[in-house]
Image 1: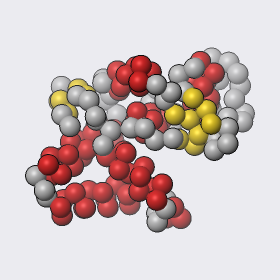
Image 2 (image 1 turned 90 degrees about the vertical axis):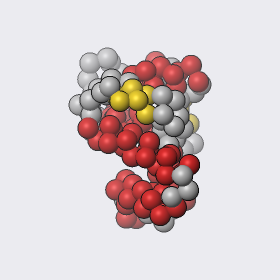
Image 3 (image 1 turned 45 degrees about the vertical axis):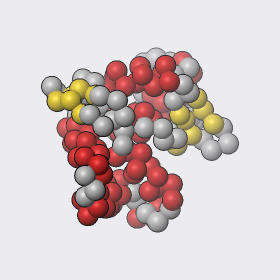
Length: 151
């Protein structure tokens, strides 16, 4: 996974979680060398067939379970601290939900909603849906730095 592109790791995690992600396909250099940002990487993945593109909403998503599993494999060896932190938070959220710890669940959702949503989109339903998807990403066992996350 390329961590040099701003926000690419987070975007891949959102895609794995089933979130449709906005992408700007304009300006893609149409080569395998020139990448100016995550939109160029996502556009290349569209061209290669790893992502499906919705031209009406300018969004991408993972087209099927086989491709989703390949993306999941790509984050198993993640060393990006923010991603590891979110995976740990997701694990804790799952356990708090099972244990009926309503206050902890509400606090975690609010924390991620505040951190991951811009103020102008804070009260939109899609923003909250994205936060819930982001917090529940590890729907399979994912091993990161020797730690297993079990939803």
